[in-house]
Amino acid sequence: MPDSQSDAATLLALAGIPTVAGKEARVVRFLEAWLRERPSLVCTTDDAGNMLILHADAAEDPVLFTAHLDHPGFVVDEITSDRVATLSFLGGVHPHFFDGGRVVIYPADPDDRTPPVCATITGRTEAEPPERLYRTCAIEADSSLDGLKPGDLAVWELPDPEIDAHGVVHARACDDLAALAAALDALDALQGTDDAPRAGLLCTRAEEVGFIGAIAACKQGTIPQSARVLALENSRSFDD
Image 1 (cartoon, one colour):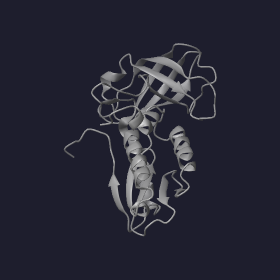
Image 2 (tube, rainbow, N blue to C red; image 1 turned 60 degrees about the vertical axis):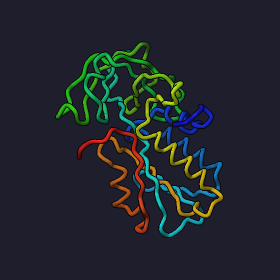
Image 3 (cartoon, one colour; image 1 turned 45 degrees about the horizontal axis):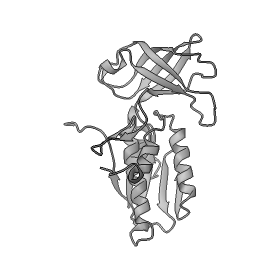
Image 4 (spheres, one colour; image 1 turned 180 degrees about the vertical axis):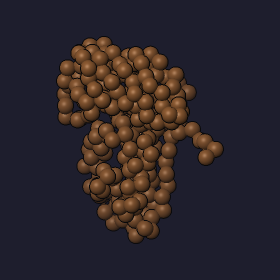
């Protein structure tokens, strides 16, 4: 666990970024800025939007950390009035969190300066089966939804990321942005060492709705055949 805010700067910066399956543009923007400060690293993007980051002198058999760029969240389906909208939830979360739950709606485009709007979930459909993915939610916004539109994203209304007195990180999107932060810090730690060319990072998209980006990375040959993959995941473990 990190000992201080400064020890976990990458984690705290990433874990507060709004992101949803298929709507990871803000995290991508963060990565692009991070890469600009590290010219020894080269990034390629495949047709599914996955990002492969390797050392400029990458070894033929790299060890790839992997992390996904999305987190369970909402996408705006329809805005029916000035303060009422319907959202689709993408990901697996226990049903009781939706009863009166609070969300924040953001433009999907990071360059869109429309301010975010807070809202309350007023109704929902059940997922089939209930513990699985996809449900539709009705929301009532605290203020006008003017400027927001279908395709925008919403995330749970939670405090900004922080580290408590016991060194425990509290954040909206530890799954999987905490793993991404760990991988980025690992690449930084390896720079200037003999191991730097061996390490890389595969950032995948839309994991929360069925490993869409990861499957595409396999099918498209994004992952080098000789690579060894170290998957980083921040979720509870399950029997299966």
